[in-house]
Image (cartoon, rainbow, N blue to C red; front, side, top):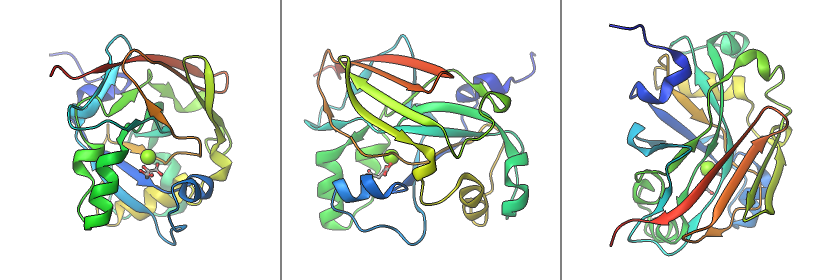
Amino acid sequence: MTARNITRFWEWGRKIICVGRNYADHAKELKNAIPTEPILFLKPPSAYVREGSSILVPRYSSDLHHEVELGVVIGKGGTAIPQSAAMEHVAGYALCLDMTARDVQDVCKSKGLPWTRAKAFDTSCPISEFIPKERIPDPGNVKLWLKVNDQLRQDGCTSQMIFSIPYLISYISKFITLEEGDLILTGTPKGVSAVQQHDELQAGIEDVVTMSFRVDRQDQ
Ligand SMILES: O=C([O-])CC(=O)C(=O)O
Ligand SMILES: [Mg+2]
């Protein structure tokens, strides 16, 4: 048996923990309150999609949004990790999209229901290659961007995050044990918008990584 390799963390079947409304400008554009503590939700590992495969609009949605986010890959597990030690638990990063069926999420919000159908469907988590920790020395200050058909839609910086990466690792690990291979999506800056079948999405982190995905519809 070959040893597991963190550079293929998406094959490990580990947790994807997502932070919502971590950028004030995005909370405002959707007319949501600025959170006073992190808002969390989960995606299953079946949500991963890699370059070369398409993002699929779920049959039940007609308003699929892109959300570009920095993903933090956990390299060393832990429970109740103090903020001061949090970065020792990070193996690296990945550029991620938190694809969101906004119409479904709006219904869930109005009924006070969980966001699972809006956030956790197959292909709702497109990811880049694994980025070793050393390639992003200051993850709290990197620029993220996303284009749809060559038009810039999102252009933010992780310095705008309300809750920092060490704070999030510490906060989450108080009640969810983090394991090697888990991924934390740290929230999206403003500029989210709808995508359609045949759109081409391109996203990047400064000069560190770029990725592209095509959008398709699920078979009817
Ligand atoms: O759906 C939302 O607006 C919450 C979220 O994931 C984010 O802010 O990244
Ligand atoms: Mg998000």
